[in-house]
Length: 155
Ligand code: ADP
Ligand code: MG
Image 1 (spheres, rainbow, N blue to C red):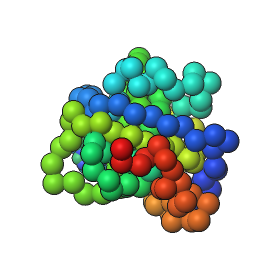
Image 2: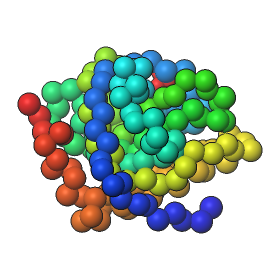
Image 3: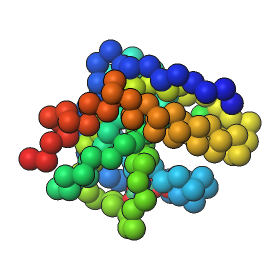
């Protein structure tokens, strides 16, 4: 897959909500867990926002660490979902699940539009590419500064 160059969003997207259970596919099928937002948070996403893969920064509960993250917003065509989801993969190895904790995310960049894949392997490769694009982009001054955004400050 050719490397994509990430775009800065015109306006960052700020989302907050309790981490809920999804279909359990992130970890089981893909080896890439995604923390799912509840419907009430997904409903707050502008309807005209392009379904696809975004990246930015995330913070959990009362923890003041801000982590890099990559996020999928849309209908996951590979899985034929009928409901829109917003799923965050935090670029950090956690020892335990964190269902029930409040997750705050600041999306600042766009990687690619949502698309279907011919195989699970192709989907996994695309996600791995997204992760590496996000990691490199978030190290650039253009995106790194957003880590200090007030929205992610521990209250
Ligand atoms: P679900 O379908 O319930 O979302 P997943 O297989 O996608 O299940 O796993 C997501 C859960 O894994 C998250 O809700 C969180 O509790 C846990 N988790 C552990 N490490 C991570 C991580 N690095 N990023 C996101 N979620 C993680
Ligand atoms: Mg998930």
